[in-house]
Length: 125
Length: 112
Image (cartoon, rainbow over all chains, first blue to last red; front, side):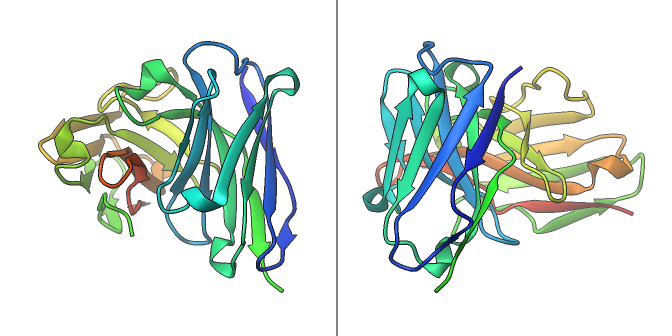
């Protein structure tokens, strides 16, 4: 059974850097075709894709946020870490990590078949 | 602002059929990229309903079906049930700029 869980601060100040950790079980991020992505959702608004890291350490970022995002993995700890710099109140959202498989995703893009419960991050001074 | 447009809301009585559209362009759905659909019940994480335009993951009822044509995709729910009341999102890949996954604007389904 695949599970993912997000962890990190619930409150950050403007201009600070946010670091979120996704701890997962039930799969290995060294298995070919597997990826872990991050998606966020501001209160009452739509989902927004942020980043994804593949089993081979290839990385993809949202073009609009690329300069602020870094995604890394620690295969031995079964963790994926997302950092977002220069946080702003508009970044207030629930942040989700999710599992992806290339065989479900098509030639481009990623289908996310298992999601974490999400973690709410508020940006305020 | 999302490049995939969905109607803000659709509604139907129990047992009816409703459809949700996802309108894109030549840089995403129209380019042939797959469309995926998610259901988000209130206060919970999204759940994958349809992947690869029309495939259901194990455990998803066959009341849910997906299709794609041209620059649009659709999710149909037949035999609408009270438990289907939720937000629904489409997702695809967009090749404009540097290319990335994109989600739709979301649709609230209300069971009357």
